[in-house]
Image (tube, rainbow over all chains, first blue to last red):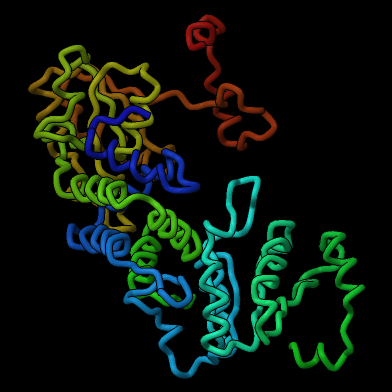
Length: 206
Length: 206
C-alpha cells in the first residue's frame, strides 16, 4: 500500500500490529478515526493509554483490577470458600458474564507447558497454597482447557494442595446446550456418554 | 460482558466503536495492548492522536496531506494535465498502490446522492472548474462507482466543465484479470461483450 501521508501510514502501521488486523482493516479503522471528532479520538487514545498505564493486577487473585485488590475479591457477597482456577483474564470475563458463579477466582496467567518453557515459576501457582490455607478454601474448581497441558496443570495443583482439606472439582464437559450431536467431536461425544448423568441432574442444570 | 476493571471496560468500549469491531474482538485487542510494553502502547496512541490532530487536506486535490499541499500535487514528476476524479482517500491509496498512474487526483469526498442529502455543495466539486481551467488540464479520468449515484456525479461534473477543452474518460469496466466468467454478474458480463476490444488493445493492457 502506498500512502500520501506519513501520519496516516504511521497510524495504519500501529493498528496492523494488533492481532488479526491486516493493512486493509487497519486503514478502515484509521479513516473512521479521521472522520470522528477530535474529542472522540482523544477519548479513544486516553482510554487506551490509561488502561495500559493504570491497570493493576489483584494481589489476591491476579485478575486485572483498578486498585490493589479487584472488585470480585473485595465484594463481601462472594463465597470466599470457593475458588475457580482459570488460565487468563478472558476466562474470568466469560464466567462472570454468565452471572451464575459467586465464588472467587485464581488467575494462573497461563498453563504449564514445559515445551514452551512455562513451568510453575512462570505462573501464579506459588501463592495458591497460602491462599487456600489462610482463607480456609473448601473447593477449588478447575476451569482449564481439556488438553494435556491443562490436565498437567490440574494434576500439579492438586499435588500442591494435597495436605489441605480442600476438595477439587472440574467444570462439566459434554455436548453444548443447543449443540448438535452429529457435529460434536468424537472425544466429547464418547466422554459425554461415559459420564452420563441421572436425569434429575439434567433438569437441575437447565 | 461483565468486566472487573473499569479501565479495561472503557478501552473495550472505545475500540468497539470502530467499524466491524464487536465486543469480543475489542477485548482481544485490549488484552494484546495490555501485554505490550508501555512504550509501545504510547507509540500506538501517539500515532493515532497525531494522525487525527495533524492531518491536513490538500488545498489542491483534497487528498490527505501532512502539509498544505499533498506529496502527489507537489511532485514535479507527475503529469499535471491529467486529473483522476475519485470518491475518497481509499481510492487514491488503491490507485497509487498500482504504481501505474502518474497524473494528479481530485478527491470529491463522496458522491452525489440527493436521497442522502448529498448535493454538489457537500462535495469538493466547485474547485474543480477553476483547477481544470488554471492548470490547463486536458483529461479528467472518472474513477467513480458504476452506480446511479456515480453516473449522476459523472454527468454533473461533465456539465460543469463543458465550456473547457478537457476530454473526459472513465476507467475500463469488464471482467477482472483472473476473474472467472461464470461468477461475473450479468451486467458486467453483458457490458464486457458490448464494449469488446480489438485484440491489440488486450495485448497492450496486459
